[in-house]
Length: 163
Figure 1 (cartoon, rainbow, N blue to C red):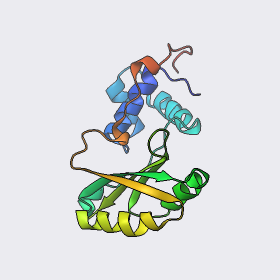
Figure 2 (cartoon, rainbow, N blue to C red):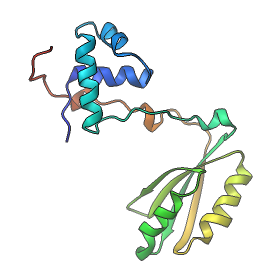
Figure 3 (spheres, rainbow, N blue to C red):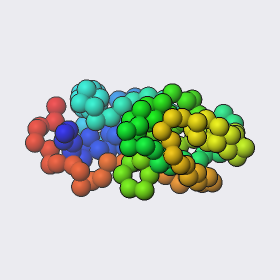
Figure 4 (cartoon, rainbow, N blue to C red):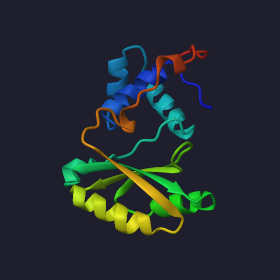
C-alpha cells in the first residue's frame, strides 16, 4: 500500500483538474515545493501505481447520451467467465463482480434507450450463465470515479525533507 502526504494529495488534486498540467505550474500553484520535487513525487506516485495518468473520453460528447447500470444474476460457476465476456463489449464502460443480490454490475453507454434495451435483452441475456438482469437508466451523474479525490485522512505526515 502506498503512503502519501498532503503535498502528494494536492499534486493529485491539481492533476484531476488538468491531467496535462506541467510540473512547473503544479509547483507554482503549491507554492512550497520546486518543480524538481513535483516531478520526483509524480514519478513516484505513478511507479507505485497510486495514480495513472491517461485520457478519459467523454461518452456524451461523442453522442452516447444514455448511461445505464445493469446488474446481473449469474450461475455461481459462471461469474468470472461472464464478467470477462462483458469486458469485451465496447459499449460497456465498467464491469465489477459484486456481492449481494447481484453477482455482476456493469455500466453501458448508448446513443438512446432503445440501444440499451437491445443490448441488454439480445446480447447480455444470451451470454451463457446469465440468469437475470436488472437495468437502471442513470439520467444524471454528479460525481464520477474519475473525480474521486484522495481524502486528507488518507495522508501521512511527511517523513522526508523536501528537496
